[in-house]
Amino acid sequence: MAIYDPTKRPAPTYDSHTHLNDDQLYMDVPAYVGRAHEFQVMEMNVVGYNRQSNQRALEIAQEYEGIRAVLGYQPEDTPDFDEAALAELDAALGQDQVVGVGETGLDYHWDTPVEIQKQAFIQHMALAKKHDLPLVVHNREAFDDVLAMLKAAGITRGVMHSFSGTPEQAQAFVDLGFYISFSGVVSFKKAEEVREAAQALPIDRILVETDAPYLAPVPMRGKLNEPAFVKYVVDDLAGTLGMKADELAEITRQNARRLFLNHD
Image 1: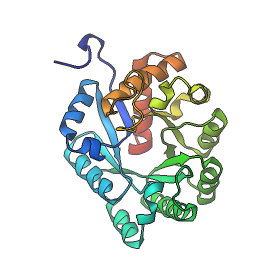
Image 2: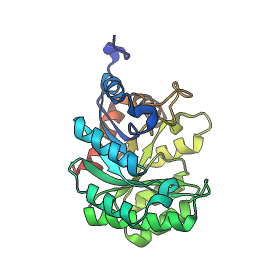
Image 3: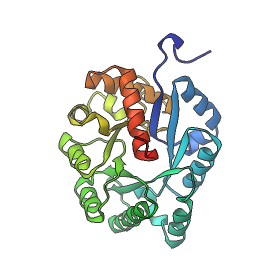
Image 4: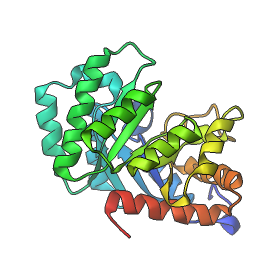
């Protein structure tokens, strides 16, 4: 039995950032992909964050049509990003299924040494340039440094993933050439500033994501998140923007394809 009302079938959607490679989802990838398809989530990026998750992302992308890999080391895992890991990532980025570098960036919430994070971020930006791939950026409590480092490196192609900042911060990244991706956070009751940021952005710079298994959107908040639930992100964001959900699903799908696949 379908889990979504077939008489109200949503438009095809692109989950631009999910972690089917996470331990909580990886052991049952076929089921999660199947449910995503019932919700018309036909395309998604599985995003790596350390050596094992990068390997899993590639494996999943090689097995499923419409699934692509983004490879990198998240800030929390940068202490493991040594010369061997850099060389391994460099080689893997040449695979056909890879559409981005990341997630990478800065996270000042945890106690990972800042200089180690910054060095890894610089190396990821260099790889994005070398392979002509967009950068998928994680930013937590580090807006000024992330923006300054992107400008210094001349990075103009990428996405701020799971955006949770202000309208002014969102615009600063858009001014660089970046896209802004909204996760289930946009549906949270106290996320009024995030909704204001979405309302202030040009529609051709908005993406949607789940960041599964984290940040499940309302009405699934508190449950294990999965790619199928990006439909609820679209529903909520469409309401915020005064649009029909199907229209926003199509626009964000085209935006994602433009960024990650160079499709006009």
